[in-house]
Picture 1 (cartoon, rainbow, N blue to C red):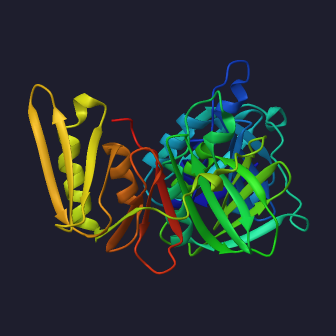
Picture 2: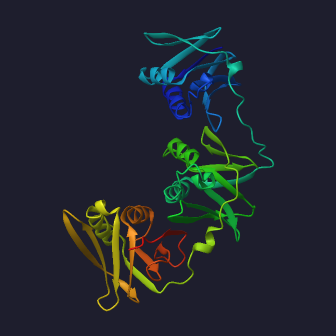
Length: 366
């Protein structure tokens, strides 16, 4: 193999895929990055057998070929080079990288030993094209409520599914739940995408990318982000029927300014650290005021309040971190917060007429 590429493009590609490289016991090749010429482009790829990340860059190809190189060494070396042209040439399992006055020989492994990269039949796949801003927001709004408990694998991902002609994303860890309506959908889809894979896609996104293409087959999903692709296995299993947990009506309905709500929750959280984050929210319908009380047994206690529009008085105890994280991803100037008594689920939405996002938090037993 013999070719030349720009340092900027090669460094970007290596940085994008190297995070996926893994040194799993017994498979040291997974700690390597594959470099392979394809036509007049260079394919840069890595996989840990769960996720595969690929990146294509334009190159001046003199001689076709392929090799795999230690991910950390080659990515750190190339990123340290000055801008300009990088020359690559292989001899057996060794590659020489030259740029100006810099030259290194890196010992690699023959590309034949590298696992086959996953493929998807695009003609049969379910395909969505999603604006980058909507995609990023939808993932940030749902990833936070997915579980890290490996004993319930279906909850460690985000559930992509079509309902009533729309694509929805949902995630729950048993204590909270989020649902986001994303785009219209003529296709039927029900797939659980690992949260770790979605986080990798988010890291791959740049400001220059306008849209993300998402392709599903029966066992995999592929995210195409400009010249980069991230392909992941889907989580096998049936997602719980979470919609039955969403209360359609609530006795107490509170609407208040988002930034004011965020501030009083943050202050209350400072005093709730010793009590497992427990804060008590009281809606006063007469005063039209929401107050939040928290106690730090040895350091003091706090009561903060904010003006609100309240229908029916009520009180509920929540985890302050869960509430802060929910407020951090709700997109709106005003928030509607509703519940029925101390033990029913609380529902948070932005106060638009038809909000696309819903966040549910289960109360703590006070």
